[in-house]
Amino acid sequence: MRIINIALLGFGTVGQGVYELLEKNRDLLKTRLGLEFRIKKILVRDKHKKRELKVPRELFTTNFEEILKDEDISIICELMGGIEPARSYILSALETGKQVVTANKAVLAERGAEIFETAKRKRAYLGFEASVGGGIPVIKTLREALVGNQIQRIMGIVNGTTNYILTKMLEQGLSFEKALEEAKIKGFAEPDPSLDLKGIDSAHKIALLGSLSFGVFIPFEKVYVEGIEEITLMDLQFAKSFGYIIKLLAEARKIKHQIEIRVFPVLLPENHILTSIRLNYNAILIKGDFVGDILLYGLGAGKAPTASAVVSDIVEASEYLISQNSPLIRYPLKEDKELSIKPIEKGIFKYYFRFSALDQPGVLSKISGILGKYGISISSVVQMGRQKKKGAVPIVILTHESEEKKVSLALEEIDRLEVVKAKTQSLRILE
Figure 1 (spheres, rainbow, N blue to C red):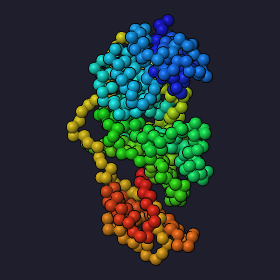
Figure 2: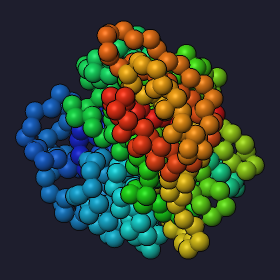
Figure 3: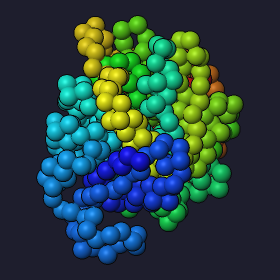
Figure 4: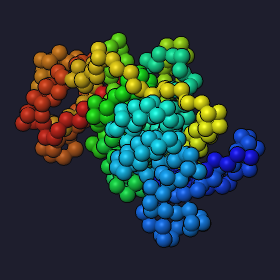
């Protein structure tokens, strides 16, 4: 039976998950594939650190060169995260003829152009199924199952932390702070959850998914990003009263020679397929020109789901090693000089506005007058009565479709009114 030797770079949550899966299902993989997978080396910062998982001490090393020069190791799994040294390790592994598997969406989204190009030049395998969606097989779906389709749109809920928080706020009436605290206790949020809350994690993922979908590398910095930090329980409840649910949505779509790619909280109709995605689950909706709409759903993060995705890439890399064939190049390297990213300012959306204004005669007419000045048409209005003497009250307005730039100008003018006491909350509505 052929033995496939593997090195793990990093032994955190995902690295331990991969080790456990390969150990626990060793016999299953032997039966299904006729291969034995062995972890030969594990790169760590401190090989003497006490770990709950029992692993032979001789597997640990702090020297990457030791792994790189070991000819018996044919597959390197980068599970460290971050940009450096992950980028340098991946490039070095590819240059020396190793097959590479990574779960690192950040390095692919920000430095993917050189990584994909190196893999292509060296005709090496680069697997990254675990970089987006945990155990959801979205990468393989795009690269294999839908390879004959022109992808027209890909959108979804790709961050479990933010989805958990929004779900708990709406269903249990929790404040943002309380919902975040609960997410941390349950292990769904990192000690520093800023990358999740600000939408950066989702932006890394949609940059990668958009690149694969449209066949051209989309730099991370081209993604428009808003997070959920300003979403309040009041917004969730008002949206619900109008028949909408607020979700943090990642979306990329191509219209002729323009790509729209963004991450932001949106109001989705209650009957939209993505509004049923609760807690820390993810879902990705893909539209192809021949296949139509398909939905992928599951746990988008965590040790076990992500380890499952890593091992699927390890198996695929092994197939290339055994067949001695070079992998088919399905990387987003095509150049399209006519293709451009559509600025968010030119976007056309329906909007939800929540104004905080004094409850006195003429306030609503002043706000609606400014909206009308910029051609923004109102579809619904809710004005709450005063609760405290001389206090500000919420006024909620839904609009028909308007251009983002005009909306920005109108809100700047409205927020300068003396009767408006806080910055206006503005959210987009997608039908």
